[in-house]
Length: 316
Image (cartoon, rainbow, N blue to C red):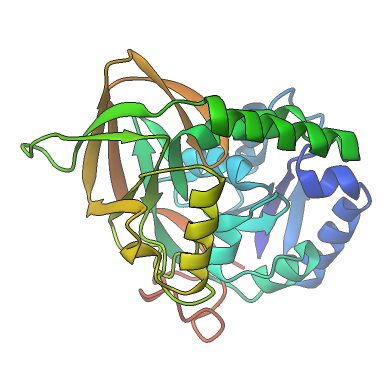
């Protein structure tokens, strides 16, 4: 199988293990890939390196990075027919978890050699795509602090992040937003410090935290926090661990295939798969069913992916 490999040199895992890149290349070749690699200096930014990766014409692009890096790759690959292979090198690695891939990078590389092509949904807000979730409110501020400290593993950096998060819990006021769950529906007004739009739905089962069993359901899930202090987070984590988080009165939830979010502010800060954006209001969310082709473990290894694979084999 012919593929191109693109690694994000700023991903958290590679920053801590610079020798890992060579081991990943060896594992992919052992898995059966005829591999081209895009060097880190091929272009000054990720967009340029994606251009270089796609110029080779390989039917598979294997991308190593966090969810934000995968978001950028998915935006370029949607509708092209090129399949995305995922190597988890970030902090959360939500997409890799949902696909059923091992989280150890070398194990994931070997698993891709036995994978098949599936089509999954791609969501967007005002033209900005996301694979997992789009977040408004307090988590964005915390994420911005975390991004500034990326690569700094010192205890002092972690301490500064914790202090910044505590200050935000106390100082960040609720936002007044209006939600329209479909065209022609009335607006629902809410006060919230955190709101999340998820590409398909999280599972409600004991021990399942932020796991989406179906990635091709064609539905957006909207969750509005009725709190968002430390106590609220603890309650929600306990409810998730017990598999009862949707029944919690601390959270409002809806499902829709389109939705819009209105605000008295002309712009809102949004975080799509960990990437911070400033978008004009209103925010219009929609989902594109089956828009992205991915390499995923076969159904015997990942029964949560509900639909059958795309009927096309990888070129030899």
